Image (cartoon, helix red, strand yellow):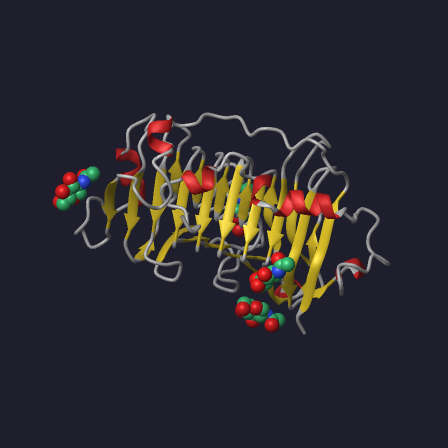
Length: 326
Ligand SMILES: *[C@@H]1O[C@H](CO)[C@@H](O)[C@H](O)[C@H]1NC(C)=O
Ligand SMILES: *[C@@H]1O[C@H](CO)[C@@H](O)[C@H](O)[C@H]1NC(C)=O
Ligand SMILES: *[C@@H]1O[C@H](CO)[C@@H](O)[C@H](O)[C@H]1NC(C)=O
Ligand SMILES: *[C@@H]1O[C@H](CO)[C@@H](O)[C@H](O)[C@H]1NC(C)=O
């Protein structure tokens, strides 16, 4: 039975400050050229068959100059790319585009450390990724090997102004480390079982599917989020807006990774059994909810669910490859 999470907030404290994002911004001559239209850009084609400019994604990224200040599209054709890829902090304005999240896959198998094992690491500001799936196959798909369940990231995102459209992130534990910065995820699928969306990003996940594969852990529960806001003055927190929670297993919507964790489920549906009384049923029923689950005023909800939470200055519509109406 699907349950509507009208409004469910998991956090210990509410930061008053919605303060500026800061960070480096590319010169206006590039970023103001406006929306999905108008921007001129170079395209580098990655094609495993050898008919593009490169056969690996990383070779294409490596070919982009340091301190890049113009949008560059790295177009990755259909295929399974067995490589670990990284957009380093000095390579902004990259638009990584696949043929579809069920066509272009980047797959890596590592559980070294959460700092280094992500299939995709993005450290630059102004990155747009569309129509690609990232998989860490250390434990995924479940049952494909005998590895004990351990953190194995599909993606680690730490740049500011990063947007993901129609992307897939697949793993089991710590699938997506939304480390820091302002991020927008739209129409993405994120799959995992334990703490599979974690970190201190200031992020809106809109119309995303959170696919829980915690059934195999039974009787142990799964955990969707592990948010790590550490102080009441921090502006980060995860907002899930119009999302769909599907899958199996007994699952918590989240457990705080740090003391001021902040996660909001707004107008989202779920098809799961939740381990926690407070997460069951209408969000307006606060009885039986864990003590750290808070109610928000209408104004606070509005602040967190409006785009200005992550986008006061309009960076999303200014990015050359956004998916919003121009
Ligand atoms: C990619 O290949 C095309 C066709 O060969 C070529 O025209 C273009 O200059 C190449 N681009 C880069 C960035 O190497
Ligand atoms: C990674 O997985 C291997 C094989 O399951 C295991 O022996 C090793 O301890 C794991 N490494 C870490 C850092 O968890
Ligand atoms: C849970 O879902 C996964 C992925 O769809 C599936 O492989 C698995 O068999 C399911 N487990 C149970 C217990 O239903
Ligand atoms: C709730 O989500 C549905 C489905 O995504 C959407 O059509 C509707 O406009 C949303 N309602 C509100 C109040 O945001």
